[in-house]
Image 1: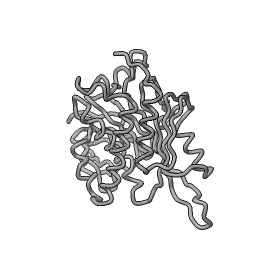
Image 2: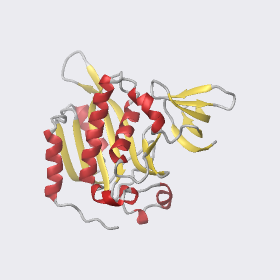
Image 3: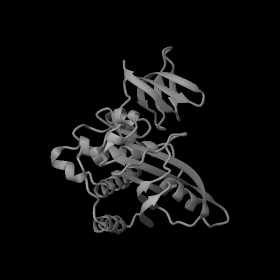
Image 4: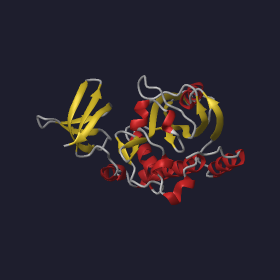
Length: 276
């Protein structure tokens, strides 16, 4: 399936709608950039940007993923970053909450229910459709007494991506929303449309957290790709292997090892998973 680029007017309309919400203090869409995350991080550290901020790019030349991974940035991929004030109370759940927002936003479009591979990779039909990278950085707030954390959230969501020219590993493991969309919803996989849906879902998730602090923990069972599976998790302390129970109140992955010890993994990468 081939998609043509949307006219600039449609992009402007999307940005005007986002600005009309009054949530973001800075909203920009650029044609090409090295990395939206890097750009926002530099502005946050320099204190030259108002928060919350949104930066969208049609193309990235040096996008990065977790660790030393490169961020594959093909045409048709929705690529954007947010810079948002970060409180200690929500820092541990933020990665999960954003993954949940993406999954919720694309659920009505998808033939199959999107699921999340902890902490925030979104999958449809067993293939990855969205990756999220979050960096927490300090920011001078202009006063003489305080420094507050800022989260820079980078999102890469395959909306209309032709994976035929992608690296072989990606062909096997990744998918695009236009491939997974219901026939009646295929016109709603344009990056501009999906961006609005994701941001609305994110804002709604934040509002819900204020009134229902435990909602994400309770709902995670319904969106987890790993629950009741045998997982191998690489952590700074080594490999953790065991049966996945879900997540803790802090958003950590709960893994029951072969010697019946329950391990709470706060940070790590999933190397593999399988049915028990």
